[in-house]
Amino acid sequence: MKISKISRFFVFSFALAVLLMVPVYAYTYSYQEKGMCSFCGTYDAKFFNIDNSVCYFYDVDCPNCGIRERRPSLASFHKWIPYQDVVATCTSDGFKSSRCQNCGIMVLRIESFPALGHDWAETSRTAATCTTAGTVNYTCSVCNETKSESIAALDHDWDETSRTPAACLTAGSILYTCSRCNETKTETIPQLGTSHIWTVSGQTAATCTTPGRTGYTCSRCGEVKQETSPALDHDWQETSRKNATCTTPGSIHYDCSRCDETKTETIPKLAEDHTWTETARTEPTCTASGSADYECSTCHETKTESLPALDHDWEQSGHTDPSCTAPGSTSYTCSRCGFSRSENLPALGSGHAWTETSRTETEVHYTCSTCGETKTEPIKAPSDMTMSSLLEKITAVFSTALDWTGTVAATIAANPMLLLCVVLGFIGTGVLLFKRFLRL
Image 1 (spheres, one colour):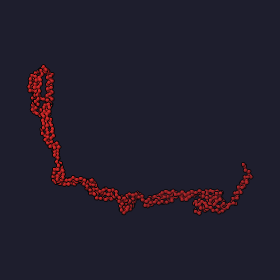
Image 2 (cartoon, one colour; image 1 turned 90 degrees about the vertical axis):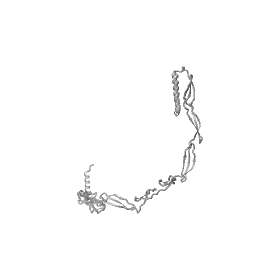
Image 3 (cartoon, rainbow, N blue to C red; image 1 turned 30 degrees about the horizontal axis):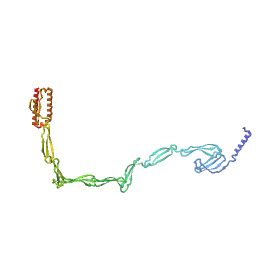
Image 4 (spheres, rainbow, N blue to C red; image 1 turned 180 degrees about the vertical axis):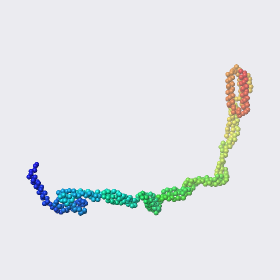
């Protein structure tokens, strides 16, 4: 859409009229309202004296810092140019300000910089001790301002090094040593009371020979003590007695009822020897012993003496002589008790000891040299005698002789006469055998 030249003229004329009318309508009036001071930040600043004569602005009067500040209004037509820069220091703020090129006298703070604060550097230090304070000196590296700070005293660092406990009747103590400065101090522990509180901690009963002991410990302070009670002595009780006799002493045995110890007391003997009186007797027999009982008239001790058995009084009551083949016997009777016994007499041999007494052509007569018995044997014809039969007869004779020798050996050894007869019998037998041998 194109604008005509007439339209452009009317628009320019209207704008010029408005600009020319602004000074006509310029005015100044007073108005109060609380606001914020740009310098100290106090909210109690008062706005007043609004002036619209040149540029729109208003005054701000701060009751705290006493600065009157002119601020442009929001709808002003100021033309701002840099006016003044204030650098921030360690303790004060910095800012940038501008002024209006039109009104010239109005100064506006448009940007603020907070104070930098000191840059403290430690320059020296005095260490604190347990009882004295220390100090630290600082210098600001920016403005060279100095300051000192105090270091509080450390107080002692007490360590317990020894302790003496308090007792009921004596005070205790605690010794402390400072771990930093080695200073010492002692604190008193008050005594626990005015007397001990004893409790029994151990007890050993008194015996017959040793005293008793009771240990006590104070329940409050731990102190100990011991009390002793006397020994009881033995309580003797008689347990057995052996009475004295005329020849031997007696004794009494005692046991202690408390400790089981024993003792023995001696009773002296009554005399040097007994006076025995016989009180009873059992007569001995042939096979059984007897006895005699005695009692001492002084000490009443008793004794029994054994009477030996009498043995039998044997008398011969009968006799049968033995023969060569049959035993004999002898009978005996005891004259005191009438008991009888018989003794066997062994046979004189196991066979007769034949001795030839006579001979005929047909027979031979023999007599026993031991018992006197006789016998007759026939003589066989020579034709009947052969070497084999002779050997049989010799063998039989020697067998008989050997048997007879074993049987009568004991009898021969006990009777010399019988031995002589046996020897003669052997000689006779040998002669007969020799004769028969010659006949062959």
